[in-house]
Image (cartoon, rainbow, N blue to C red; front, side):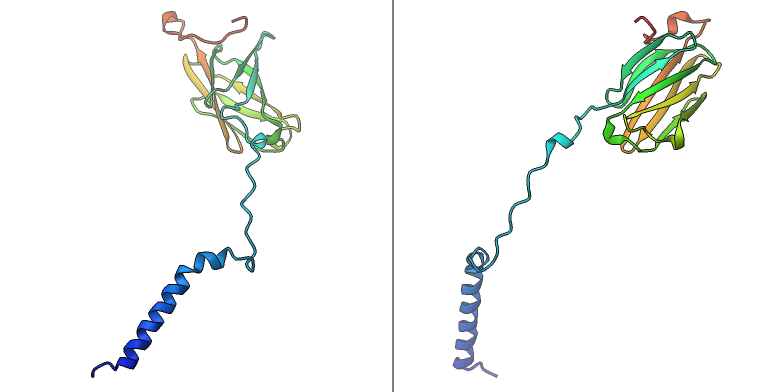
Length: 174
């Protein structure tokens, strides 16, 4: 059945109305009748920690000496330790992590235990961990996790049969 000229004209008119409506849509959206949506405020960059705001560790040895090191890129400097030595590690996190639980896991043997109430970081950002190295020479790592902050403490027990095989390590007085 052939389309009548009246129907053809109606379709063309409807198309023009639709085109005119779409063309004026941006003007309608920004017209005074519609409330303007304000842009979001800029982020408060003072609340964003620096990229490498890793914790600081003060490592206390059995002979009452200590060393201090900061996590860089999620890793602490390699620290020398004796076989089966038990050390205390005081970690200082940003105070924004206060009350966050801390998980400390010995990855290569040895024993890691979080000290304190319920393994929560104190209001001043500190928490203590005890670590006992294994009796074998080599690398011992302790993973510490607080919220999204992950750091790796690294300890080296030297091999008395191969003293030249010891990498550079952090020791008291160095």
